Length: 447
Image (cartoon, rainbow, N blue to C red):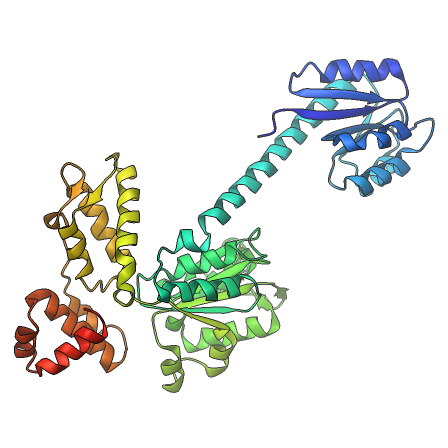
């Protein structure tokens, strides 16, 4: 927060200048310097004032001329013009030239100036808070802070994220549920040149098909039953920023056509209106479906697919970056310990081994839930194997909800039975397959 405001008072009437300075300095947070000419002021602009009060008529220059000179040196500084004349045309002209306010010299000048300075200080502090908040967000969403991992798979993701953040290309993020697709989208946005503009996330799959057009494009008052006011859609909310469309594979064919037009024309039309609204939006999409398969089978438009594909980023499931599990587990444990006032928590080797042997169908999200519970359950701040509880929802029940390769299904099934029975021989017997196949999968994926 900016506690002290440096104010320059430019006034050729020394008595009036001293009166203003005295009145302003009644607030201990205000520092005041007075100048009697425009030349004196310009010679002292290097001192970097926060606010300038400016007499309209000075012996060496006119207020309009001096205002323009000030703005050349410091374009955003608030300049309050104080004049002995109540000429509305002069006031309007100066405000158009960039003056913050226009105050006439009378009995109310001091009180009016006090209020204007108070507003300026509040606005400066709001801007500072906003900049600090944005800096904190950018720090929070640094690539390696938002996505934890040191495996070669995740380092490849970081490389692609960096390329995405340094460009304006659309981005498509692929990965199973729980791999952190929205985190990646946010990290790209908050490290891009759009970071000071909005990041708007929409879960397409969570919005009923009859409401999705209004949600994305907005609607006019009276355009349908219940539309009592005009509503701005997500595209307009994200203008000059980033729109993240999660689960875009769930979008129906009619809406796909409208999204394609919006992206091609860079404009949207609110429901109930014929007037197009221009939008400048970067699109990041995410899905756990195989969109190329959806295109081949006619469920997703090919032209929209190529429009949104841009730079594709595949987020590997946690079982494919097994080496990141200890790092993630410790990170989540530290977070949970802080939230639950538990002090420093550590894993026993047996507990960590148990975490490493699990397949995590829910990916990073599931690991976090397991570790959060373990932190609460553990005694003496040591997480032991019995504190780690896997929610057997069952792994095989979830297996067929995602379309993937036969090799991937084989991997998940064999991993599940190895976790359960430990012995490759017993797994081969249970699945009625050769031991060689079990060992091949086991060795290939380092199970």
